[in-house]
Image: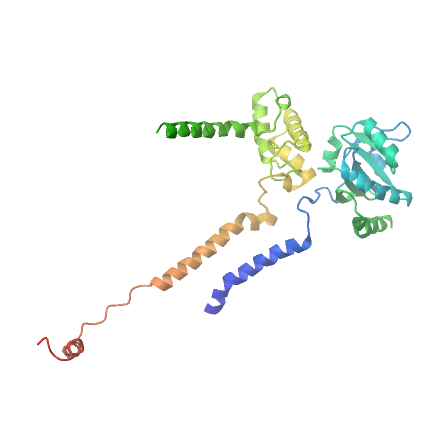
Length: 177
Length: 165
């Protein structure tokens, strides 16, 4: 018994090291925060369009998912990295609605003209207020919305090929059932 | 002597300017402030309790990030609309989770966080107490005084040749 008691500090230390080791091994980026909006309905919003020939976006347009809502901006460098992936999956028939976050409309138009426009609907959130209702804290962020209009997943930062293959595609397939 | 005085004066100046500099660290721009001083004071106090999600270890009161400015604005809008301080916090927690609060709320999930340190301290204190008790302990009772035979033997041991006699 006494022997065990002597070993107690060592055991506690081992637990501590174990926790630290797990955190290190997970390679988790501490800047990525969990979303408080998961499994909640998307917030109510109604945003004007960016382009003349493409409608804006309101919450009522999110029915009939699954779909992605992508917050982006022309001034956002990671968005540029993410863009080819969005273009590719849009080509495969994934529905992506875009919200241009705190951007100058002319800049955004130039950006889309240069890189292509993967969006089915495209809205402008000039003051970033709707983004805050979604819980966005930096662009790009992408939300997966299910058929009932609920948020099922949030991607913080650009969608990487890995995220696409292991998280977003499986989720979309499941939600499409 | 004169040098020391000058140095002292300089040091005092630097120390005195620290609060001023620290005050300047607040990111709030004059045009963001509310006209009503009571509401503005509440907004400032609330802002100090809310985390900037971009910089993460700064409050939105300290942060210059765009999002922090937007959140400061929202806090003020909600207060003007008549929200209580708690309602403003709930509004932000609904969007950003408990993480937006710099003081995590006390609930089942955070018991370890709030009470863990006290528990560890109590356990450590208990350990120290047990250790000290065991080592110090009550002093053992004094042995009975030596009898005549023992006295004689002691004397012999101390002075085997009987020189002292």
